Image (cartoon, rainbow, N blue to C red; front, side):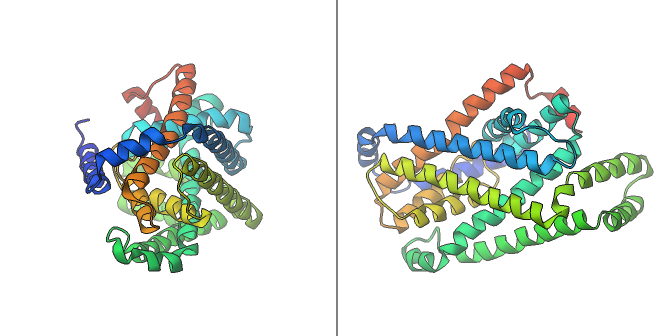
Length: 333
């Protein structure tokens, strides 16, 4: 709580919440909230849990070269990780699930984190794909939306960043001997002697976690799975939309999904407060949905994405009998 980056995230969230709610007529907003048919959220939650299961399968697939662990065992750990991302700052859930996997299955944290970073890169590529599919239509919608006006430029920069990261990881995975040589040279040249052994060991374990990227078939499998995961999440957006009685195309919801999830990479308070909501509302308003309905839908969708997986992850974490603490952080080092 005392660290500067936590409070920076809070300030950023406050700013995005202000963007989300400025000009909103609360009376109209509450009328929309009260009149919604919330039964539509239930199938949306069911579809989302299928997507979480697909995430667990993808992680199981990425970890296969290190250790073959069934998807059934990976699912609770995946749920814990997403719970951690929702309630702890700085996406600490990613480290949390790596530590729990080490405790349960003996997989080194560095190897787990390598696969988790690969997941995030593929997620970013798919999200940018969702945005690019709709860029021509978005260009026609953003004239009255200052918030979305520069999304094309952001998408281009994001594509460059994620593509560069993907290329670096693919090269590291396909040429491990060369990568180790370059990495060891940098360790010897730039780090004090007392760190050489530990950092070198971490580098070797990290490269082990990239082993699944040495096969084009594996890369294709991870990419296809990532597309399926995010399409399933978009289907949840579609179900929740029916609770509020407005209609936009599935492609519009894909665009919204892509933009809001790219926005959540911005540092914020735990749970992506504001950084999820402001761009989501802006996309819907650009598509002609009134602000009160757009705000009610986006905030409800955010809650429906946050609450179920957080409760499930908390249940699994309690069953593990551990909690996020200084001792657990040291175990991750």
